[in-house]
Image (cartoon, rainbow, N blue to C red; front, side, top):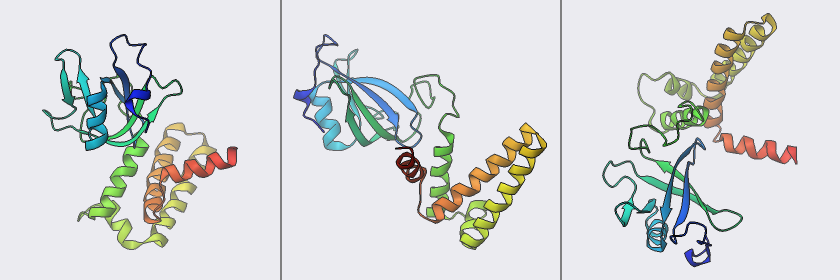
Length: 200
């Protein structure tokens, strides 16, 4: 990451760096804040997103009151070095209203990635009574059989032209595929990388 002194801060007029926060898993844009050098250095040092509060004129670590911290995953400067993008893992709702984000984009935006995280959590904790846990216990052969079964049902609904049933069955297919991906230690990001290589 580039030193704070290398950012171009003349656009804001107050020497502050605009910072966009994005959920590292769902890629949903969560909020916009501002950093001075002290906030930037504290963010880098602690791994917790810290802003400069313009209203309070003080450092503000997001979550210090609510417990909804933003854990830094990646930090990226934009092409002009005048804005920072932080991909973070939120502990809970980001907005003070209790919503996922400060922007009123659809709440189900990026939900497939959220579901990927839920499946991974089930795999790690294996909670008793969970259908996902039962699939992991049965192993790749049974999970794979469910993927094939759901794929067949999805195609049947496509051929029949039943859109609602197609969406329902395709959703089942995606869920079971996510379980199989997790069982094989593969993520959606791995698939995106492979598809991007083919596109190039």
